[in-house]
Length: 105
Image (tube, helix red, strand yellow):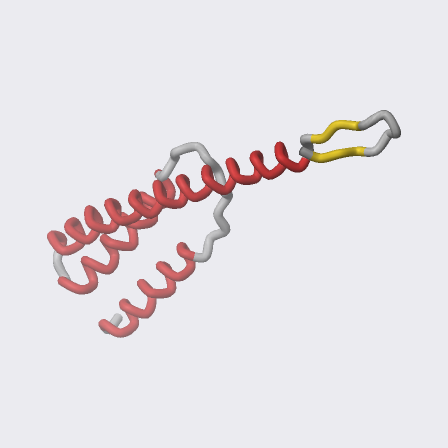
């Protein structure tokens, strides 16, 4: 294959991996993002430099970037889950007076 076809294939794989639906979880696990980043980085590094060393450097750099993105997504998921719990707690805090009317705090 020529160089343009390889770069196009790499871009298609990276785009496909980036559009995989994510499950929002506050579990601190960033392994999926790390693996996707390392794979994409190795692919791009290898294609750009035409060497194994370039693929290795790209894989390490992509893994570090993917891990950082994964931890950032986990923090955002945890903040989002906490705000939902707080909203629900605030919304459900009420008392019923003698006439049976509900009053929220």
